[in-house]
Length: 138
Length: 118
Image (cartoon, rainbow over all chains, first blue to last red; front, side, top):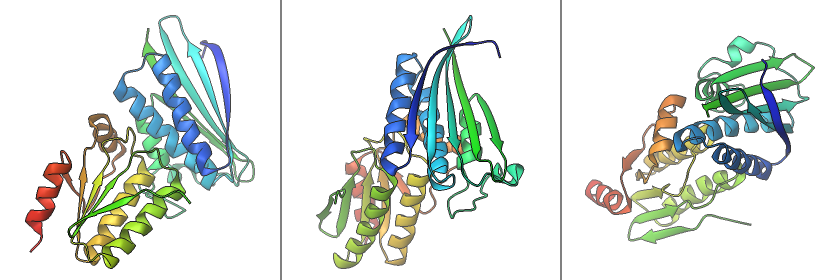
């Protein structure tokens, strides 16, 4: 983990409209970094899923957009942070189709599939942070 | 309150989604479509998503739910204009749109719906 952080953007995730704004911001940053349309679509979709989770299950929180550069590649890292109830059974939460809220249960597992890197940190009573990264060779 | 307009063409309902919908707007659309199927005695619903550059699991579920409700009300649903990048992402996401027919564009979608109605 020795890449450089070029810029960090913080966006609140407190309302439905915030999720729309987040999608746009992620899309704009991916375009600026030169990602292809398909890569953009996958990452924005993943971001949308995670942003919704933060809002719906995490009681609201924030997204951190971090522009990364490595010696031969550039990337976008997204952190979705909330101070909500946390996830008790992470493995269960990551299972395709598992939902605690009447959704499709594809959000977390989907985001993991659509991004290049995925990390989830959560503890009951201590909130949740989900991180995804998409890289492109420069 | 903002709403996505629903147009009527004979016994068909046409919706073109041209904005990046927030979740509440998507739910309102689902409710509006269901109400209109009943009030207009529609036999088909055409949902044009050619302007959508992402379809996530929430919107996917909204579309599936709408199709399921339409079916119960004896109407068929066709989704048209899915962008290729969206199709690829939906497959990777594992999101199958159950009970939803697809067509390339509005014209073909309408033909599909007209063929299906008796």
